[in-house]
Amino acid sequence: MTRADPVVAQPKQQGNKDRAEHSLGFFKTAAGEYGEGDRFLGVRVPDVRKTVRSFRGIELSRLEGLLYSPWHEVRLFSLL
Image (cartoon, rainbow, N blue to C red; front, side):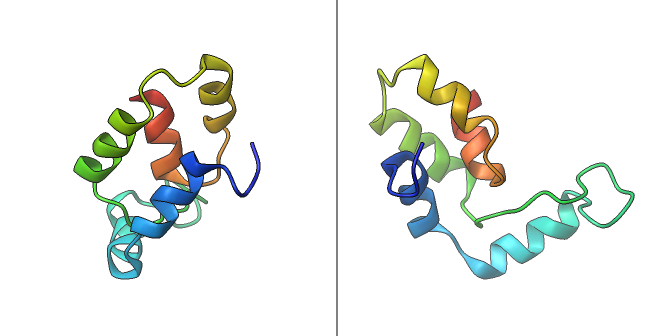
């Protein structure tokens, strides 16, 4: 997976800084909390689902690599 990968690029374009910041508190990402270190782009789940539909048929090997993304929404994409 490269930085130019459209699976990663599309959510980055859809991101919302305010929503990403809110998610940091909602998912308890402070030191010692269950989501410590998680990073967010600020993409709503319905928008992630739309992106998933547009990549129907993607190879499983690409999806496996996305599970290790630092971005929460990209990992969610791979699971959906």
